[in-house]
Length: 80
Image 1 (cartoon, rainbow, N blue to C red):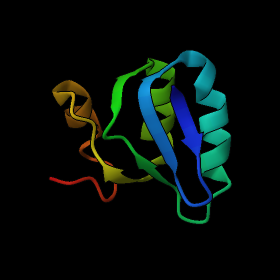
Image 2: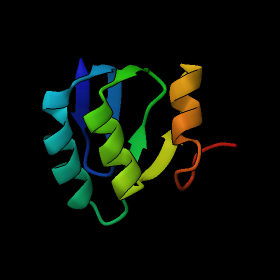
Image 3: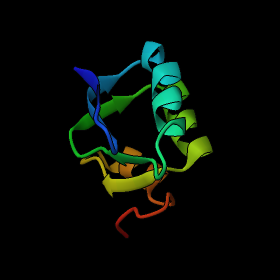
Image 4: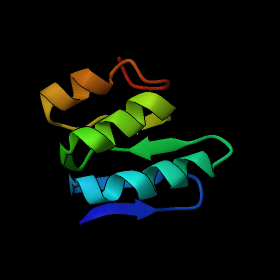
Protein backbone atom coordinates (compact mmCIF):
# COMPACT_ATOMS: atom_id res chain seq x y z
CA UNK A 1 0.00 0.00 0.00
CA UNK A 2 2.78 2.47 0.83
CA UNK A 3 1.88 5.61 2.73
CA UNK A 4 -1.34 7.21 3.90
CA UNK A 5 -0.94 10.94 4.45
CA UNK A 6 -3.17 12.11 7.29
CA UNK A 7 -3.54 15.67 8.62
CA UNK A 8 -1.32 15.07 11.66
CA UNK A 9 0.88 12.10 10.72
CA UNK A 10 1.82 9.57 8.05
CA UNK A 11 0.92 5.87 8.19
CA UNK A 12 3.54 3.66 6.56
CA UNK A 13 2.02 0.33 5.48
CA UNK A 14 3.50 -2.85 4.03
CA UNK A 15 6.26 -1.76 1.63
CA UNK A 16 7.49 1.81 1.34
CA UNK A 17 9.59 2.21 -1.80
CA UNK A 18 12.13 4.67 -3.07
CA UNK A 19 9.41 6.46 -5.02
CA UNK A 20 7.68 7.33 -1.71
CA UNK A 21 10.68 9.02 -0.06
CA UNK A 22 10.33 12.54 -1.49
CA UNK A 23 6.58 12.78 -0.86
CA UNK A 24 7.10 11.49 2.69
CA UNK A 25 9.75 14.13 3.32
CA UNK A 26 7.51 16.90 1.99
CA UNK A 27 4.55 15.73 4.07
CA UNK A 28 6.56 15.52 7.28
CA UNK A 29 8.16 18.92 6.69
CA UNK A 30 4.68 20.41 6.32
CA UNK A 31 3.46 19.18 9.70
CA UNK A 32 3.85 21.33 12.82
CA UNK A 33 4.81 18.22 14.83
CA UNK A 34 5.68 15.44 12.36
CA UNK A 35 4.74 11.90 13.35
CA UNK A 36 4.64 8.46 11.78
CA UNK A 37 2.75 5.25 12.50
CA UNK A 38 4.81 2.22 11.49
CA UNK A 39 3.18 -0.87 13.03
CA UNK A 40 2.15 -2.31 9.65
CA UNK A 41 5.37 -1.38 7.82
CA UNK A 42 7.14 -4.54 6.64
CA UNK A 43 9.82 -3.06 4.37
CA UNK A 44 11.24 0.43 4.20
CA UNK A 45 13.53 1.41 1.32
CA UNK A 46 16.81 2.96 2.49
CA UNK A 47 15.79 6.33 1.00
CA UNK A 48 12.62 6.40 3.11
CA UNK A 49 14.58 5.25 6.16
CA UNK A 50 16.99 8.15 5.59
CA UNK A 51 14.05 10.57 5.49
CA UNK A 52 12.91 9.33 8.89
CA UNK A 53 16.40 9.44 10.36
CA UNK A 54 17.01 12.95 8.99
CA UNK A 55 13.67 14.52 9.94
CA UNK A 56 13.25 12.58 13.21
CA UNK A 57 9.44 12.53 13.45
CA UNK A 58 7.65 11.26 16.54
CA UNK A 59 7.06 7.54 16.26
CA UNK A 60 3.52 6.64 17.26
CA UNK A 61 4.16 2.91 16.84
CA UNK A 62 7.23 0.93 15.82
CA UNK A 63 7.14 -1.73 13.10
CA UNK A 64 6.82 -5.39 14.09
CA UNK A 65 9.92 -6.25 12.05
CA UNK A 66 12.74 -6.34 14.63
CA UNK A 67 15.62 -4.92 12.58
CA UNK A 68 13.55 -1.99 11.38
CA UNK A 69 12.18 -1.35 14.87
CA UNK A 70 15.74 -1.31 16.26
CA UNK A 71 16.90 1.07 13.54
CA UNK A 72 14.10 3.51 14.38
CA UNK A 73 14.07 3.10 18.16
CA UNK A 74 16.17 6.24 18.68
CA UNK A 75 13.60 8.56 17.11
CA UNK A 76 11.58 10.87 19.34
CA UNK A 77 8.65 9.18 20.99
CA UNK A 78 9.67 5.70 19.89
CA UNK A 79 8.71 3.09 22.48
CA UNK A 80 11.77 1.67 24.25
